[in-house]
Length: 115
Image (cartoon, rainbow, N blue to C red; front, side):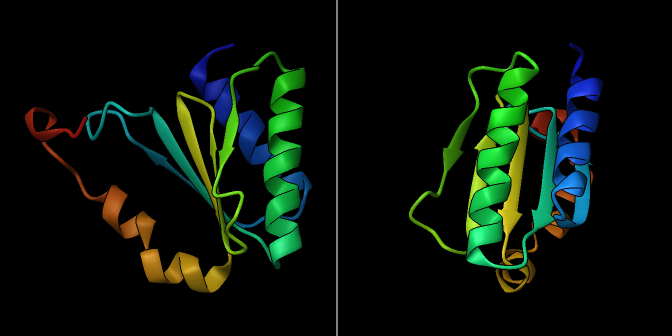
């Protein structure tokens, strides 16, 4: 499955499970850690946890078996690492505090791309 199709599937899974303010950022030419970053908000600690678990389970059905969840001990943030796409699921206040959209949306010259 190509990366754009995976990104679309992740966005659809998050949307179908009532994630809020889903944003995708193209990381190509900005970093080598992933091709895309998807950021979404959950409405509660349980919702954030459920979104991360559902996402990993549904991606496994699609053949992505190496996904993992980071931040299991956190009640207001989870990261799902799909290798080519990083998914952050935040409580809205934490999302606003870290403001990853602003940080990663700026253009970075390729020769300065982070590893």
